[in-house]
Length: 567
Image (cartoon, rainbow, N blue to C red; front, side, top):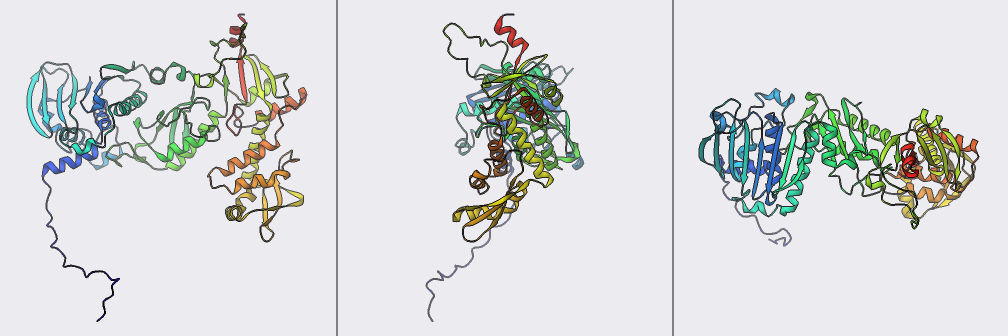
């Protein structure tokens, strides 16, 4: 009988299956520790959570060697009773929940009873604690899961947890830990988030003996200045309070001119817990997307109060992720709130800066946007009440009110008005207007493949196209806007955006249409025409920024003018 050489070798006899057995306690502890304690910042998070749950009003964090040499967290909370300290070091022992239903009404940051035993399994842990009114406190030492000395000492109420030689018994884990500087940066970022989430608590962070952060515990505004710095704190815009889905939304955000290169400066709180939510953070940045350059991110403190039964915090061992019922609706509310706040933020040069030209000065100082200007708010009534003075260089409309002088970019103002007109007409289903003669365009094979599936979406935006055979298309309708003289001539260029693979192609297409149709710089406007354009801008939702994200209005306040002219 022939053997099929492609069939492979005949399977060998199956080996005897290994027997099932219960793992030894030390292996279970090591597995649990690996889930809870991933790196030094995990230890800091668990210890600070315990301190906050204990009602601490002051927490001191001392880090050496990025946390691998030592981590010490000192608090003035309620402490642990001497007879319960060994119990606190056992797995699944906690004072924070009593039953399954408590998981859906959690008011504490910790709840699993895994933090201390997991830390003790991979480090040399010393725990000194005392309760209020007790004559003595107690200290216990645990070395890599093995209990050591127990002693009594006089100390104030609270707890000091000292962790040394982290991962000393698991050298393989050390390969995945970053440098001391990188780990210290992670810890610093975490503690700053805690300071923002609990502005009523005094935090003190020391890195290798040097003070890195100190907060006063005097409330949110003070904490924001201590974490972000006074310059940034002065440039933050209030977000809410307002409803967002089934939640209450509040917080602070930077205007579009003040950005950073990473998302590290966005703090999201859900019921006071620092969490990560891809859906909510994506919605938050969607609110900025038309306003920010690629690769730039805002700074923000976003606080959501959600009914406790609607939040599941038992999702991940790190407790950094939560599941929220109605998360999509909350995300939509957050996105809308951000767009409304940013769309009315007017930039102001800081009054303290001197811009008056000196004898040898040829240009004005630079770097204003990143230095943290103050922000004002443009409302429809305020814009309509402004008095038009004139025009500068055929590009800027000059207006005034009781607070000072405003410079308005006429092209960007008209661009914003047209963009929102197109968006409204798209939502109402009347985006296009028929052309007297259809336009004939030719597309290559790749453009046809990408554009074809989007023809219905393009029609909803005002571009009605139909296949005319071969590589030809007829354009029968373009977006209905007041000025379309040059729009038909660039239809092919605009439609190429509809064939892009990027997710924001609709926004970019409408932005380009609005830019083509808007009043150009260099065009002289009468006072009446400038007034009409200002009224159009007053009717928009975001009068302070154009669809590209550039500023439209600059406010020169009375205080600023007084400073420059020494009035």
